Figure (cartoon, rainbow, N blue to C red):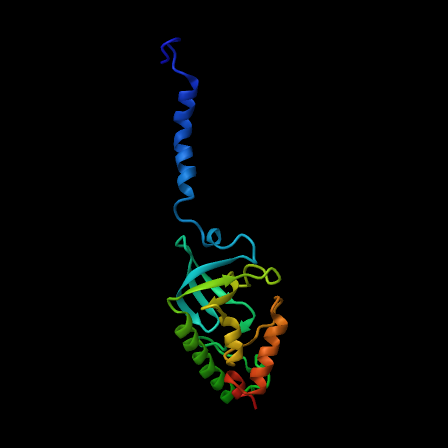
Length: 194
């Protein structure tokens, strides 16, 4: 009650009703944000994350600074599968035979081991590409992964651990050149070619 009117102010009652809503609204931003909330607002932005798990040579799980987690598919590269059958026709010159598939599987395991050695538990920078979009067909983030100031995506191509992935992205021409050089020198998966 206000001393000059003897009535309870209307404003005080309204605040009493709004207070729980305001508390909920304010605290909603402090707990359990989604991984997208911690990723950059535009695709060209970059964010530093920690790699929590290496799925295979071209896919990793990461944790954002706010605690959110997501799966990242390395943009523009494709390593041979380790948990599924490989299709040798995806790797130019690799014969579509048991020997070709076995060779690709071995190199998929090598690519995964390389990723594990270079990325597991490390802080890396994710860079995004407006030409590629934010997410791929399986809902995974698409990104260039930078570790120790160097592109891990290009390292996979240079060592022959990966092929150029047929997609639209800004680095495509450079990635095609790196794949060609690795193939000509029969590095990594390209040693499987006939």
